[in-house]
Amino acid sequence: MTATDDRATDLAMRARRALSNCGTDVESTSSGSAHVPMLVSHSPIDGSILMNVPAVTAAQVDDLVSRAHEAFLSWRQVPAPLRGQIIKAFGRRLEEHKEDLADLVQLEVGKIRSEALGEVQEMIDICDFAVGLSRQLEGRTMPSERPGHRLMETWHPRGVVGVISAFNFPVAVWAWNTAIALVCGDTVVWKPSERTPLTALACSTLLEAVLAEHSAPVGTHVLALADRDAGPALVDHPLAAVISATGSERMGAEVAPRVAARFGHCILELGGNNAAIVAPSADLDLAVRGIVFAAAGTAGQRCTSLRRVIAHSSIIDDLLRRLADVYARLRVGNPLDDGVLVGPLIDQGSFDRMQAAIAEAVTAGGTVIVGGERVDVEGCPDAAYVRPALVRMPVQADIVRRETFAPILYVMAYETLDEAVALQNGVPQGLSSSIFTLDQREAEVFMSSAGSDCGIVNVNIGTSGAEIGGAFGGEKTTGGGRESGSDSWRGYMRRATNTINYSHDLPLAQGVSFE
Image (cartoon, rainbow, N blue to C red):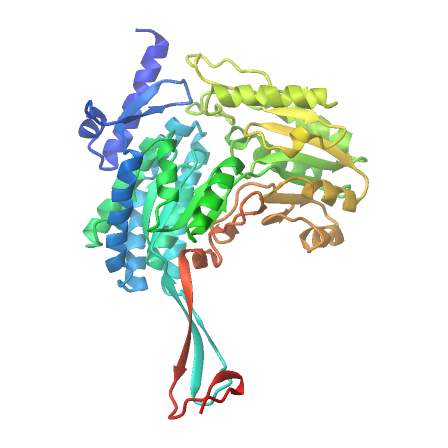
């Protein structure tokens, strides 16, 4: 057996150990049968197979949604504060298994350790947020024009929430949706990415154990491990009241009209193509740190990854020099090794798309300053490691206006703030944005209605690293949905306007008489 074989065996054993620690019966789960389709979990770290797990078919999705709907009929009647207590218990269970879940995130996504642990922490944080929310699902009372009447709003759970999550945040985005949906009184059917079945299996095992311990209805949360062909069955199901989907713009363009055709409700979190403006007054040391993490973190595979820098002409050369120096020194390698900052791309296809994008940028007049080349990592010949690329562009060409889900950072110059904002907004996507400036007037303009058109607008930090307390999501082809904090809970509930007559009369609104 070669060293590469030894490493692959070690990764598979590590995955099985983490799953077992989370309560999954690994042997029965991985055995399957000749009549059951299987999902294959590959590790992007070295391309090896971690484990095979049974999958459901598109035809079986109907049964899963129906089961969740039956559970909803009971779950919606559990008082919200009691639902919150169950989510509180789930948060504590996640704390107990933080290391195990981080192991699985690393193995299936290729994140460095701190990012994997940070993603699990997001799950814990959203549970804490949801516990408080369970006592704050407030309506409002409005004055009625009719004597002896009260006008008010109440909020009620919608039903089954179908959660479709992507590979790059295999647990956090699910938790954002699930913790809020369950507290709101909805039930959940989760279709995770077919690339990350093990993280999904571990999370679902932990949650369903907590639900059972608290006598929640069977089917309150249902896992649908399946390939992408099963997605439409969930999207089209008439009992799936809400579809919360995270993925590409192409995927969102398919999901939205299908859900709308049956008058369902969508929460879409799609493409990013995020930009940072660097003004003449910017603290460049601060800007460089913020830019590098946002652009190179998670190997550029975040929806909030920084894709474009729009720097003032007076400082662009200095900024490029600083960025090039850091990019050349970034340690790219096995994310399980200490000191590595950039792990692998998810697969060879991502590497090929990155190379094609760089070639198109050069054809459009761009210059590669540093990066873009494959990095050989010992023991990982079948993986896709690449040095993050820094490309100077004379104009915002078509390739810059399209998001490439890889670590390419395009840098362009501007002369006036109006020009910079126009470049920032001049793409179809509208997720995250930032400006680095010490000029308060520039910062205020950027955050005003005349500034960034994105759902996330930052000052003196990068575009990635959102906290769960704020609503997460974007505009334009990013989908317009909101998840996580603030009042995003409203997306999982329906509003009822109530009029209560406590008088002895029956006056009609607007003075109408029908005597």
